Image 1 (cartoon, rainbow, N blue to C red):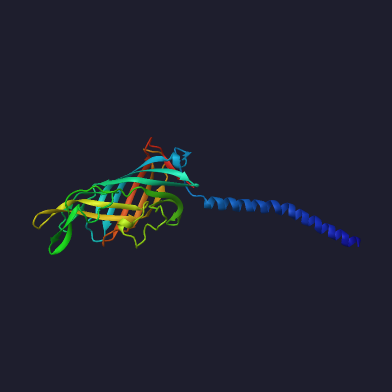
Image 2: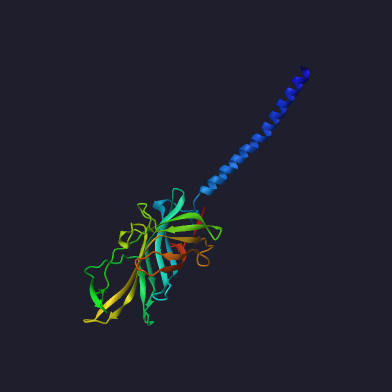
Length: 283
């Protein structure tokens, strides 16, 4: 009996010792797993000059400037222009969001089959449907809309944006999703037409200077192409404004109202519009 009691006591001491050793290790493991899960779930947030940007009431005005290229597979109607956008960014529910409130692009012309150049521009205004501002003319036996002159259009901005974590070519990056419908609709839905796209989605129109249509009486036709949907940009953190500001890069296909496929390449610098603040994203 004495021997059995001694063995029992020895086992209990060993078990208590193992518990004292393993319990802290288990707690540490759970803490590390919890921290890793929390870090993985964190979304990027905006910082301005190293300070966390506030909520919707403390939005920071931002200015985007750079270039835009619209290209077709057939080599016609290509745009290589200068792009300027204005918007605001803030943090909400633990991640960075914002909106692009205005867009314009100059030096965005197009060429005809005879290589005749027609200067143009891009606007965030909504292209008009056929109505009082245009009429139909017969050109080479085909009815075509003839625009009498420039018209005032309703703006399609603002476009909603949000920062998310993602991957680009196997590398972890911060992405800026541009074009988010306020009602949750998929901005890239194939069932939507340009005029049915909900607020918050990307919508812009490429307008080129007119060409004369050879019919009687002479009329002027404006080239217009409308684009809509959503896009995702890679967000690059800068080091110092003026030397190395933050920026966005977009490259891919665009949905549009015509039958010709377009690809878009956009490169933009991003700075605070009030005091050229350095805007970065961390998450």
